[in-house]
Length: 165
Image 1 (cartoon, rainbow, N blue to C red):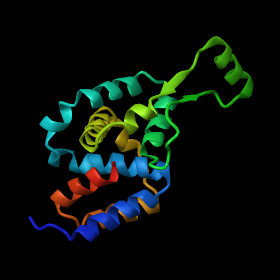
Image 2 (image 1 turned 180 degrees about the vertical axis):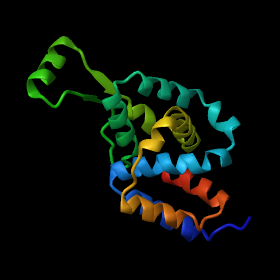
Image 3 (image 1 turned 60 degrees about the horizontal axis):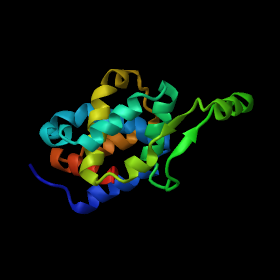
């Protein structure tokens, strides 16, 4: 297998990060579907930190799971754990008063090393694999995914590792 120039992988990471957050999440799910078999499962499945975080995300409501994954992909966020409240002000107030809210574990994700982040997304990809077929990619996602086709399998794995740092 030939390896692309490091600049090609770097350009792919830059292109990925320039996508809207929803498009990055969809692209990541579609990429996982295509390269999951190329990632050595023994290393990514043995991460206790990643498994614990996958479990915490799995305990969130479906809406908050999606929001948590978006927030985790958003590399610019540095504001730590946050509480996601209902967008309806009266319901949000009730959640604050009763304590009925869920915490998105952003700090915990941010503290993971790159191998643990890769393990987290690998394990999330396995859990969400059935929902990947429901993704209708935008033209931006399709164009981006086509650009990744020129990368070797090793470079695609390198791309994923760098994109999730």
